[in-house]
Image (cartoon, rainbow, N blue to C red; front, side, top):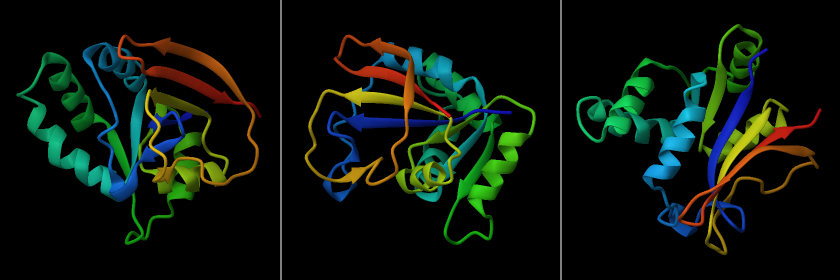
Length: 175
């Protein structure tokens, strides 16, 4: 069975975005990219909400022959990886699609950003691990990854502190 991993950037107070969908508080540097991209490469299915997908689709295809070597490598991964996109406009039942994909052979399934999608998959008990970058900032209000939910016990399986004060933490769901 494949693992479904939720990848999210969070403020220290748990927000994925501030007021008006502001994500300017998210800090990335080459050290973080090197670390996180190693983990992303374990996935052979990427799951996006429609808005996140549209953002990715407008950027990454243009980086295949541009940008840094790591950006080109990630762009090639993005172009090659199978994608599943959740949308209210689609007839695809995203919970059933992820549940089916999880039972199939293959690498990890990575869910990128997309807080509404993540909350749906959390409620369906489909998330096996959380890969979080915890940003050294308090946002105060906005869009939370975990607004309300039942208690879920986690085990810290990996952590790394970067020179810019960001912490990467991987938690596995205890079942």
